[in-house]
Length: 96
Image (cartoon, rainbow, N blue to C red; front, side, top):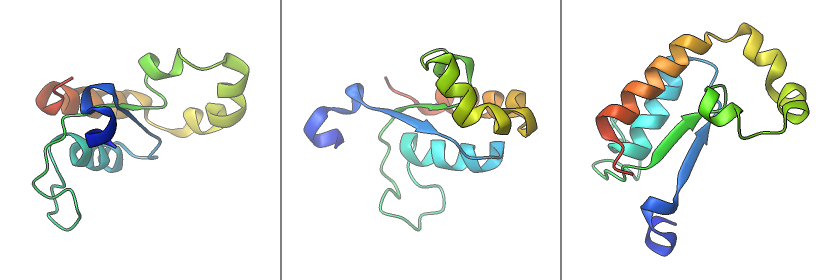
């Protein structure tokens, strides 16, 4: 898809329940698969990546839909830890 649409036009939205899992997925689509086990091993796409509970992403959804689909999970997730992990990955590896 990045070849067809351009990496600068892509955004990855994650929903992992833990900061570490979200960070691993975020690193995969920005710096390349850190486990070197997948097809993105060594492929630094630099894509924009956010987690659904981050305010930047959350603000883009209809509030009622967000509450219905994510609200209950948001109450039990460590939103601050997830946001910190995602911000760190974007600062280090995002190109766009």
